[in-house]
Image (cartoon, rainbow, N blue to C red; front, side, top):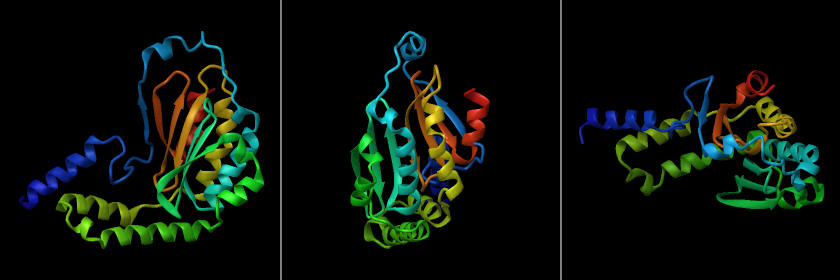
Length: 221
């Protein structure tokens, strides 16, 4: 494959994904994906369900923030209707762990389940993992354009800031307690600078984490 063709494929890959292998390019990213239209049409007729996670949301939100800032967790999914919390840890990055949401209100549970590490050390460990992957024979067997994409991502990525992480978890109760189009689930990953949210009207909102407060003020009065 000639170099020009390889560059063309690389650019196509980066353009055709919603969030590409190279990460986010737009500082004001806000993308909406429509879901089941019947969910949107019946949203005001459906009785609101309050899960066990709603009963302890203040404590859980604070503990999730602590897990991202001071422990090994780098990605969190919170499913409010199911009460499910999924986490990814830098200490076991290929495996997703599943927790009952209300258990994350218990500090003893947090201390047992999630080893501590500073945010700075966690970021350094992530960068070392990327370097180790690029040194493998499997990586070197990839097509050149994929090596270029992944090299660019692993060398240039920046983690979510402390301020952005704190702002996301501080907003959970506000988003969950909206009267009509309230939050159903949310995914936050410190390796990627966006927040993925689904509301009870279905569909998905993908928002740059730095713009979450602005999104709330402009779209969710």
